[in-house]
Amino acid sequence: MDDGAVAAIHRIPVIDKMMTVLFALEGALDGASAVKLARDLKLSRTTVYRMLNTLAEHGIVTRHPGEAVFSLGPTLVRLARQVPTPPDLASVCRPYIEDLAAREGRTVKVSIRDRDEAVVIGVALGSGPFSIAAQVGRRFPLHAGAASKLLLAYAGEQDVHLVLSRKLFPHTDTTIVDKAALRHELAEIRSKGWAEDRGEFVQGVRALAAPIHDAGQRVVAALSITFVANAEELSEHIVPELLRTAEAISRRLGA
Image 1: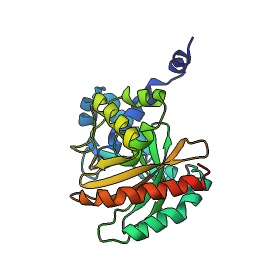
Image 2 (image 1 turned 90 degrees about the vertical axis):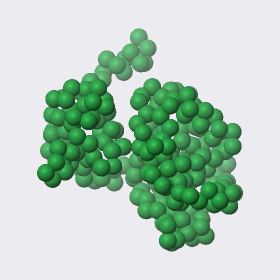
Image 3 (image 1 turned 180 degrees about the horizontal axis):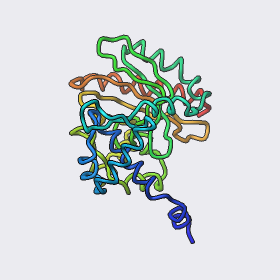
Image 4 (image 1 turned 135 degrees about the horizontal axis):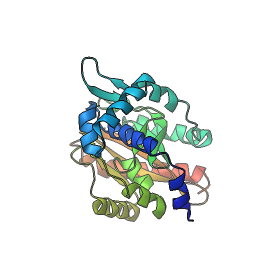
């Protein structure tokens, strides 16, 4: 019996369904009703409603006052703060991202891959008028966003296949949800050595990301910088600065 068959035997289907509901709510910034979730996920409305009510009891989701609409709840924030992150990597990156954020006036982040998500482990907030807020511990899907796509591009084929085996939820009009198109995008990222977010996770917010390598030349993190839309001219200036900073961090790690 192969590993996939063994894993399937030891899975709990109701928890798989629950996680599917939570991932769907992650992409619904204004929340979603049980009816919509059941329709989008092709699940029983009764099952989804019972799941949401149970999760709400634990604070995993929250119900909007006076509405049959649910969003992710405060318990997830508390749990996320307890997720261990590589302290050495975060501390090594700190002076570099603070310097880049100060020079560019824009928010700079360092993210790592945790299975099928990108997790922010370091943030330096920009001082410019259009600086974008960010939080350590925030998680993002691997198919949307500059850092996320970059981490997926340099992941193994098995990890890429895992992401592509699931439905790719659209977070904005520019989220890549076509699997062939995403594979093409990942190949382009590997070819040019950096990634771009065209407002794929939050409408109007763009980002650029570059890889951070360790001593074994493995991509261990993504360095990204965010800016508002309609600023294409910034890319020519920011990409070289971003790559130089990522290379400096990589050298510090022994690459």
